[in-house]
Structure formats: C-alpha cells, structure tokens
Image (cartoon, rainbow, N blue to C red; front, top):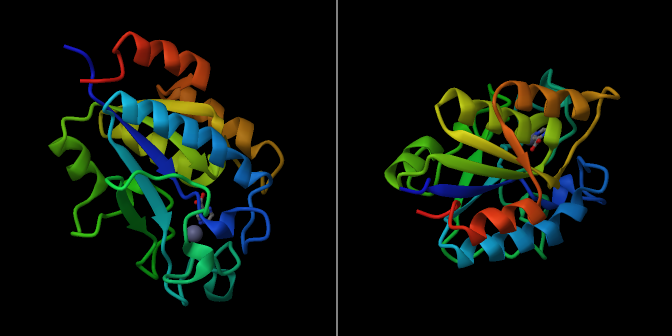
Length: 204
Ligand code: VGL
Ligand code: ZN
C-alpha cells in the first residue's frame, strides 16, 4: 500500500513577506512555487494543510515583553492574512498557533484547526504518514514543524525550492536544513516530486 501524504504550507502570511512587519528576505518567492505544489498534490488527492502565526497583541514572543521579535501576525490584522496570491484550496485545513501569550509556538504541531483539533490529531485521522513541508521561515517555523513531525513518527520531506529563511545569525538557514536532514528529513524539489506523484507514491 502506498504511503498517505499531506502537504503542509507553513506561515505564508503578509507579515513574513517583503513590506511586512517581520519580512523574510524574498519570502514572497515561495508563493508561486507553493501554488505549483498545491496544484500537483491536489491532482493526486493529497490533503493540503496551511498553518498561520496568530498572535495576540501582547505576548512574550514580542520584544516589548521579552521576546525576540517585532509585533507580527496579530490576529485579524492584514499582516496575519495569507499572501493574496497563495492559492489555498477551499478544503485546505487551516491551523493557527501562537495564541498563548506565554509561548513562541514555532511549530505547526502546536497549532489547532477551527474546531480546536491539534494538527497531529487531524493528520492521524486521515491516516497521513508523510508530510511535505514548505513555507516560512526555514530556520524557525519550518524547522520546528519538520523536527516535530519526525519526533511524532511522521516521515518528513522538506521542499527546498519552497522555503525561505531569516538568517538572524548568518548560517542559521543552512544549519537548520542540516539539522532537519540529520534528524531524518528527506529533501525534494518540484521536479523530484512530480516523479513521485507520477508513480503514485504520494497518494494513498
Ligand atoms: C516565525 C518568527 C516568529 C515563523 C514566527 O513563522 O517562522 N518566525 N514567528
Ligand atoms: Zn510569530
């Protein structure tokens, strides 16, 4: 039996794109690539998940309360909306994280859907065993989500052409990719995925 997969699009929100409050350099470049992935996975019947950073105005995640970051992705603001060109399917499962003012919550595995179900629960319910991960930022939420997926026993595939990182310290992006791979993540690109999907490996 083929492995059941899901695509996880991490935090492709206005505040992480150029012009946003916490812009990831070239963050918007992932949008057209992710749209291609979404279309391919949809054709193959693979479910699409999208996480979003969804903070209250006051949180220890922000500099003013002891955190690392300028205010960003505040609930119900324009900065927290998904990039306008990201083509999420209607049945994509949106999971939100970072609502607890005491926690950074970098990982999508700390996120929940509109019914309060955790990402892991939702993935297990659908029999998902393998998670393809792209989005923002490579060295924070993509990293944390991928490492958690592996810890929880999922296979993880990092979509190298669909991620961009922050590099707060130069080398963070490269180190995070290294860490994900050493922890068991596989890497892929659109070209290699098309072959997989073509042979049915990415569908149930
Ligand atoms: C993120 C920094 C702060 C991310 C979220 O989505 O990678 N990074 N909050
Ligand atoms: Zn955040």
